[in-house]
Length: 186
Length: 190
Image (tube, rainbow over all chains, first blue to last red; front, top):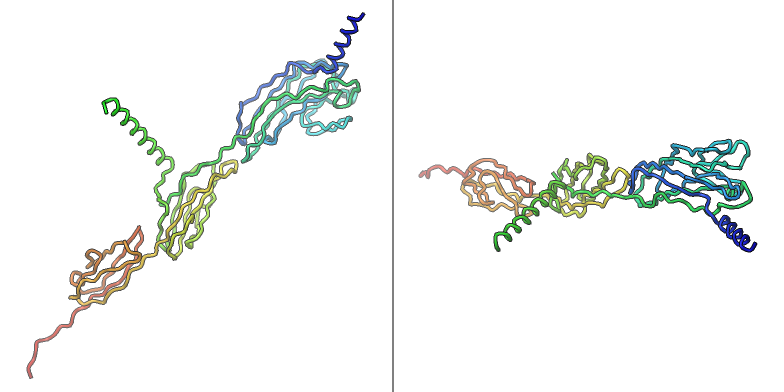
């Protein structure tokens, strides 16, 4: 009995602080570093989402450094064996919890509003983003954050609240100032 | 030095010459700072090596200079004023690349050269040689009757002449007259 209690305590301890996301991967083309005006395509896959305590997945947020501009969706995540609804590209959305989301994809459950999707993935998506015209080495970081019920307020049995953001690129805009020759006089 | 050392020195010299030639080819620098222009010169062309995706902002300061054509491009024309003197940083260009990022300003000083020649004459055909004086000094006189920056009326002979004073590509002229001497008749006895 004592052993069973220890095992149960250990299980709940682990689940209460566990990450729900696993098997993340990405491709980015072309590879950095980047100069102003370059267009970059990112493919990101979340291999598996394990909704501990029935915490369903709600959204993929794309975090961009200030040097990026013109974020454009190319491929929305799939919803294998998930709830009825669709992934909506959204620049901004405020959830019932007050959490301010965006930009990225968020799932709109058409059967039960605010529930997210029961799918465990895999979720593959892609987007394009452009390096802004700048003369300063602005931040070009790219990361993805996954949000679920715990963050959105869709389900009060909180879990999956500590999934860290997934870094895709860290760098700054490469600035190449022109070098002018000497002045000549005919 | 043995043969091998000589070979190394020659190789280093060759590489240095190639690098110098490459630099000249890349930037085409031929104008020495300060640049010299003639007073009241018009349509003087200034240029830098062109980068097609860049734009160029030129500024003309002092010397009575005024930009005439080419603002935004790598080549401009300038008209200069009449007041002689050295004008520091008279021509400035700032290149901006396609992203609008500016490079470092590039400048050149300009010396506006206003030549003048002291008038001489009129002469008689037999007058002695007279030195020619130009301002500023250091230029060269040319023309009929000019020998070693001096005017020889006897060499020129009777007539009107235009003498030219030249320096650094600039010219100015003076007019000189050589008259006939009086023709005296034979002595008469009343």
